[in-house]
Image (cartoon, rainbow, N blue to C red; front, top):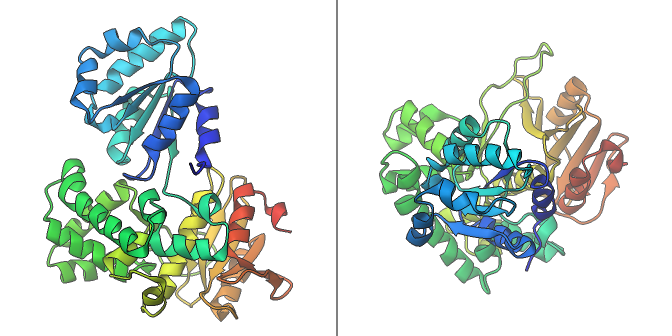
Length: 395
């Protein structure tokens, strides 16, 4: 069993609020994490994709009222959206009886609808956590394991497969399942073939700024449809739109977001890169590495940390800005080279923003100062500093 870093946070959160919504893409490990908690707390687990478990909730108030004082885990909660109103009444009734926290853990795969439904019905009674696939600090104990995580991505069944070919087969099946089953369930009817083409285009354009007009021309659809496709993949927590830093510094700033497929293994599956040799010889290797670094750092950062990129019309650019709670700003330049040097635009951007720390992430293992301001550092070392979440820890 690989211990998920979120387990301790989830356990603590359930002592503070009556309901916690755990979001994450399918197959990221939400159910496994919930079952571990279930065993620790002797909780009640209901899978709402099971007809038998849904039948138990035919009269949810009658069934759940008998469970006051116990943790009830409701998996695939989007299958029963009408349940939120019943949960509000049950939570309020339990509070009057002295059960103020830790009653319900709700698991879901799609964020926007679930957030809307739960937010409207459980306002003031619910907290949200997001579980992504395995991250670097959970599984990568060596450079070889880091490369394996980069190549295969963090979905447990993909990462833990006994061979690269089996991992690739799992990811291809995962993509097909999303196209044929999950996306039609969550969103409007979209041609699976069209959506696959769109998904593949995003993989080819990993780490690029969004150009909806170009994508619409390539797909033969209008810009609104492209936006709807992108919204859907973002809602399913498969795509990240990294926003540009918008500061009033008298510069002409880029306004379009950068687009990343959040799991590097899905990028490689969509582009047919089965092993490391194929990946290293592919034109997208640098963009893939950038996406892997961005997602790693944002996944381990303390809650409330925001990610941005910075680019001006004059060429000043920072790949990733980490904006920590409290206002501290770190600038991160990302290079896939063992002798990395920042571009001139990075120096200009840092002069504009004056971040507290400046890092250059590279695939090596040694840390050293490039000059008085910039530290060259491995991804694992920076991930550990980012997870601690205090700028002083980088000294």
